[in-house]
Picture 1 (tube, one colour):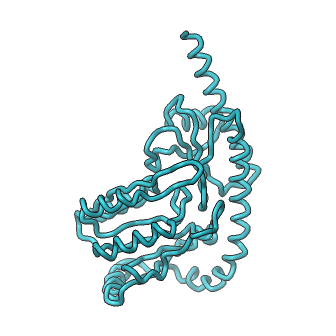
Picture 2 (spheres, one colour):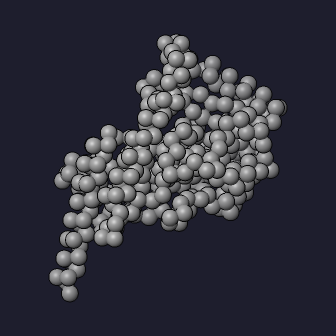
Picture 3 (tube, one colour):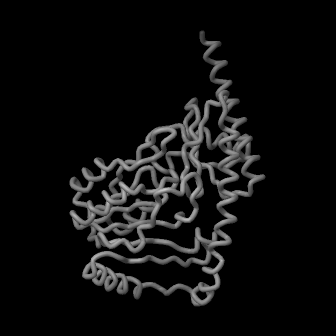
Length: 298
């Protein structure tokens, strides 16, 4: 699909792994923007995506459906526009859909790219999120689109696969049994995620709070926006030092500005609530300190 030096379009904010994989293949990861409006949520800057595709002569577009860390699914109109763009410019579409089944604040309008026929499409999934089993190291992709392009892509992938060791026989043999547990297990995970997201909204919400949880349609992460009285790096290091609490800074996901923390919703609810309350206490203490310092300077 790509030769060394070719460009792949990746979402910002987004998970940084795609940038690293592009570097390993001597390719270039060019960002396109996701924009946020509250409380409506995230949307893809389609004009920016088209501009980036033209500027870089991109070979592929990566979408994360839903995105990590924003939790936003690709909308119906965005889906049509992306497929048309890929078909018109001969770009492949790579859809990472490992979080797809974990819808939290929406169920409307979401659809998988797997099986899409309008352009050459690679849809990725696996056990790491379906059953919370990353150490079993079993993932897969579904190739779809125009028959000739699918046939050529499958042939090239077969060559690549032959160059690596195959997946482990034990996990492949266990796969039919494991997949039979996906629905029941997924229900239990969604209940935990929704409980933790509701706790986050309760703890960081209210008229006296300077924080807010951004809209989270799905996946395992909630983004917290908080007062920028110190850098994200200072905040996360302070939380480790003072509260023994580990959170990820927004800059890890290339958020456009300071003042965001990524909270994992997959924790046990009692642990999540305790951690969220300690985080709120730490932020409030820092905000109070800033106000007191400002008053003393006056």
